[in-house]
Length: 256
Image (tube, rainbow, N blue to C red):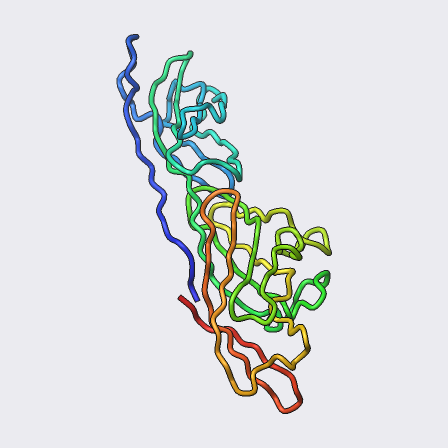
């Protein structure tokens, strides 16, 4: 089941900026801009005179400056998890003079790859009580900028929807520090994370008494929020199947 939003990373190269002082002719100094994980990689032409790289935010503010060693053809800039998405400018300079400027769009693109109930996972986290009652969300960042997940809410056709006033912090299980909720879960470019809820959406408050008498399908939604980028809401079907012993089997199906 694939859910989420789509987008594309773009790299645009331009010539020298306008300036009253003499500027060297364009030599295609910046040959490539790529993002991997949380790093912006700047590739430079061989035998370039560049000794400094500066990254500017979409608003024109300096985000980072990196010195380039003589003969180097690569410079790396670590990217934040919180920023304004858009076109970042990369300026290559030598002795304080701009040689060339390029732009790269930094924007996360989140895809929800899978939604499961905790009871379908063979090895749930040992630190998560009642893992079988949780929603498991697999997300991937296919965009060009990193982000971090900060909140998970489940609403609609589940027996125990998220109540903001009782939810534990983010509602996302912290698999690194044991019990409790994570403040945020980093989602670098090109990476996938498996998120477990902490709010027990598939818990029947009154035991199995709330299970429908016949097989019933309902629609629920999961909503993820991020440090950078819009919230992502995914809909999915929830099928309830009562059994003779009073248990209620819950399975998830496709959504929009």
